[in-house]
Length: 126
Image (cartoon, rainbow, N blue to C red; front, side, top):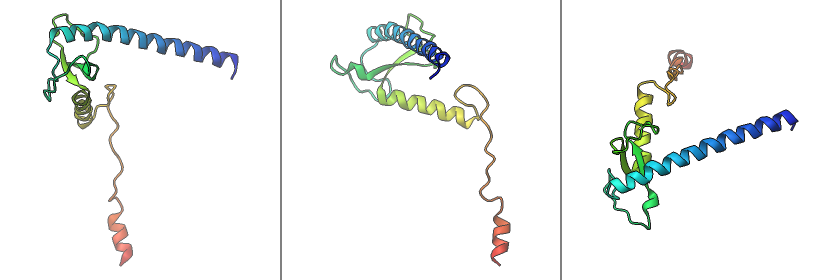
């Protein structure tokens, strides 16, 4: 690897590490608040949690904006890992059904038509 590539990779590693640290810091702040505000019960399936398994309880942002963390917890709900994954999958599918990619860009329209040459294929068999 050239010296420039090593420097570039080093900077990229620093940016990623910083982003992870900031995310972790933000996460602990609102997670701790949410665990103090709400009962340790999944808001969807009703599973109850104890100190032994509370690490499986996550904070879901109702409006899907992880930077919007009002101190009253109005944008949060506690969900188990499974329900949280399901909620995000439903959001992804809802956007996809509207033709919107996760990053907000317009998803490309499907252009493949498996039956485009069907008539020709059937005529060729005759």
